[in-house]
Length: 163
Image (cartoon, one colour):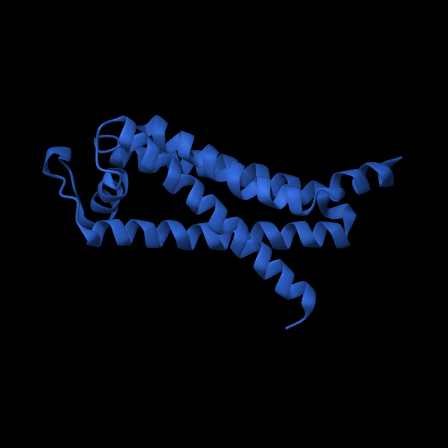
Protein backbone atom coordinates (compact mmCIF):
# COMPACT_ATOMS: atom_id res chain seq x y z
CA UNK A 1 0.00 0.00 0.00
CA UNK A 2 1.32 3.44 -0.90
CA UNK A 3 2.21 5.66 2.09
CA UNK A 4 -0.41 8.29 1.15
CA UNK A 5 -3.16 5.68 0.88
CA UNK A 6 -2.19 4.27 4.24
CA UNK A 7 -2.32 7.77 5.74
CA UNK A 8 -5.73 8.47 4.20
CA UNK A 9 -7.03 5.17 5.53
CA UNK A 10 -5.51 5.64 8.98
CA UNK A 11 -6.79 9.22 9.34
CA UNK A 12 -10.23 8.18 8.14
CA UNK A 13 -10.42 5.29 10.57
CA UNK A 14 -9.19 7.42 13.48
CA UNK A 15 -11.62 10.24 12.58
CA UNK A 16 -14.53 7.80 12.34
CA UNK A 17 -13.58 6.17 15.62
CA UNK A 18 -13.33 9.56 17.36
CA UNK A 19 -16.77 10.54 16.04
CA UNK A 20 -18.23 7.22 17.15
CA UNK A 21 -16.69 7.47 20.63
CA UNK A 22 -17.80 11.10 21.02
CA UNK A 23 -21.41 10.04 20.48
CA UNK A 24 -21.05 7.03 22.77
CA UNK A 25 -19.69 9.23 25.56
CA UNK A 26 -22.40 11.84 24.94
CA UNK A 27 -25.19 9.28 25.29
CA UNK A 28 -23.50 7.64 28.27
CA UNK A 29 -23.50 11.01 30.08
CA UNK A 30 -27.01 11.84 28.78
CA UNK A 31 -28.35 8.54 30.13
CA UNK A 32 -26.61 8.82 33.49
CA UNK A 33 -27.90 12.37 33.99
CA UNK A 34 -31.38 11.10 33.16
CA UNK A 35 -31.07 8.35 35.78
CA UNK A 36 -31.03 5.54 33.21
CA UNK A 37 -28.67 2.74 32.36
CA UNK A 38 -25.57 4.00 30.49
CA UNK A 39 -26.62 1.76 27.59
CA UNK A 40 -30.27 2.85 27.54
CA UNK A 41 -30.10 4.91 24.34
CA UNK A 42 -28.14 2.26 22.42
CA UNK A 43 -30.64 -0.38 23.54
CA UNK A 44 -33.59 1.86 22.67
CA UNK A 45 -32.27 2.79 19.22
CA UNK A 46 -31.22 -0.77 18.45
CA UNK A 47 -34.56 -2.12 19.60
CA UNK A 48 -36.50 0.49 17.60
CA UNK A 49 -34.43 0.23 14.41
CA UNK A 50 -33.80 -3.52 14.29
CA UNK A 51 -36.42 -5.16 16.49
CA UNK A 52 -39.49 -2.95 15.94
CA UNK A 53 -39.84 -1.57 19.47
CA UNK A 54 -42.93 0.66 19.55
CA UNK A 55 -43.52 1.08 23.26
CA UNK A 56 -40.61 2.49 25.30
CA UNK A 57 -42.11 0.89 28.41
CA UNK A 58 -41.35 -2.48 26.80
CA UNK A 59 -37.63 -1.72 26.43
CA UNK A 60 -35.32 -4.37 27.83
CA UNK A 61 -31.60 -3.65 27.94
CA UNK A 62 -30.18 -6.63 26.09
CA UNK A 63 -26.92 -7.24 24.21
CA UNK A 64 -28.53 -7.86 20.80
CA UNK A 65 -30.01 -4.39 20.18
CA UNK A 66 -27.01 -2.68 21.78
CA UNK A 67 -24.54 -4.55 19.58
CA UNK A 68 -26.70 -4.06 16.47
CA UNK A 69 -26.98 -0.30 16.96
CA UNK A 70 -23.32 0.14 17.90
CA UNK A 71 -22.22 -1.96 14.94
CA UNK A 72 -24.25 0.16 12.53
CA UNK A 73 -23.10 3.41 14.12
CA UNK A 74 -19.44 2.33 14.11
CA UNK A 75 -19.59 1.18 10.48
CA UNK A 76 -21.22 4.42 9.31
CA UNK A 77 -18.73 6.49 11.31
CA UNK A 78 -15.73 4.68 9.86
CA UNK A 79 -17.02 4.98 6.30
CA UNK A 80 -17.78 8.69 6.76
CA UNK A 81 -14.35 9.23 8.29
CA UNK A 82 -12.60 7.55 5.37
CA UNK A 83 -14.60 9.52 2.79
CA UNK A 84 -13.92 12.80 4.59
CA UNK A 85 -10.22 11.97 4.91
CA UNK A 86 -9.95 11.09 1.23
CA UNK A 87 -11.71 14.32 0.22
CA UNK A 88 -9.31 16.40 2.31
CA UNK A 89 -6.25 14.64 0.90
CA UNK A 90 -7.56 15.22 -2.62
CA UNK A 91 -8.17 18.88 -1.82
CA UNK A 92 -4.57 19.21 -0.65
CA UNK A 93 -3.41 17.77 -3.98
CA UNK A 94 -5.89 19.67 -6.17
CA UNK A 95 -6.79 22.95 -4.51
CA UNK A 96 -9.36 23.85 -7.17
CA UNK A 97 -11.79 21.18 -5.91
CA UNK A 98 -12.18 22.81 -2.48
CA UNK A 99 -15.52 24.32 -3.55
CA UNK A 100 -16.83 20.89 -4.45
CA UNK A 101 -15.52 19.38 -1.20
CA UNK A 102 -17.04 22.21 0.83
CA UNK A 103 -20.45 21.55 -0.72
CA UNK A 104 -20.09 17.79 -0.21
CA UNK A 105 -19.49 18.42 3.51
CA UNK A 106 -22.37 20.90 3.61
CA UNK A 107 -24.67 18.48 1.81
CA UNK A 108 -23.57 15.70 4.15
CA UNK A 109 -24.49 17.82 7.15
CA UNK A 110 -27.89 18.72 5.68
CA UNK A 111 -28.48 15.10 4.69
CA UNK A 112 -27.67 13.96 8.20
CA UNK A 113 -30.18 16.45 9.59
CA UNK A 114 -32.82 15.16 7.18
CA UNK A 115 -31.97 11.58 8.12
CA UNK A 116 -32.31 12.50 11.78
CA UNK A 117 -35.71 14.00 10.99
CA UNK A 118 -36.85 10.86 9.20
CA UNK A 119 -35.40 8.45 11.73
CA UNK A 120 -36.48 10.79 14.51
CA UNK A 121 -40.08 10.44 13.42
CA UNK A 122 -39.74 6.68 13.74
CA UNK A 123 -37.98 6.69 17.09
CA UNK A 124 -39.33 9.89 18.70
CA UNK A 125 -41.32 7.78 21.09
CA UNK A 126 -38.12 6.01 22.24
CA UNK A 127 -35.42 8.72 22.28
CA UNK A 128 -35.90 12.52 22.25
CA UNK A 129 -35.16 13.91 18.77
CA UNK A 130 -33.10 16.77 20.17
CA UNK A 131 -30.69 14.32 21.83
CA UNK A 132 -30.07 12.66 18.47
CA UNK A 133 -29.50 16.10 16.91
CA UNK A 134 -27.01 17.05 19.63
CA UNK A 135 -25.29 13.69 19.25
CA UNK A 136 -24.96 14.35 15.51
CA UNK A 137 -23.33 17.71 16.21
CA UNK A 138 -20.98 16.04 18.72
CA UNK A 139 -20.15 13.41 16.08
CA UNK A 140 -19.35 16.06 13.47
CA UNK A 141 -17.25 18.01 15.98
CA UNK A 142 -15.24 14.90 16.90
CA UNK A 143 -14.69 13.58 13.39
CA UNK A 144 -14.30 16.98 11.76
CA UNK A 145 -12.18 18.41 14.55
CA UNK A 146 -9.65 15.62 14.20
CA UNK A 147 -9.45 15.99 10.42
CA UNK A 148 -9.29 19.78 10.70
CA UNK A 149 -6.31 19.39 13.05
CA UNK A 150 -4.61 16.91 10.69
CA UNK A 151 -5.08 19.23 7.70
CA UNK A 152 -4.77 22.57 9.50
CA UNK A 153 -2.42 23.97 6.84
CA UNK A 154 -4.99 23.49 4.08
CA UNK A 155 -6.99 26.65 4.78
CA UNK A 156 -3.82 28.76 4.78
CA UNK A 157 -2.67 27.18 1.53
CA UNK A 158 -6.02 27.90 -0.11
CA UNK A 159 -5.93 31.53 1.10
CA UNK A 160 -2.39 32.05 -0.21
CA UNK A 161 -3.38 30.60 -3.56
CA UNK A 162 -6.31 33.01 -3.92
CA UNK A 163 -4.12 36.07 -3.25
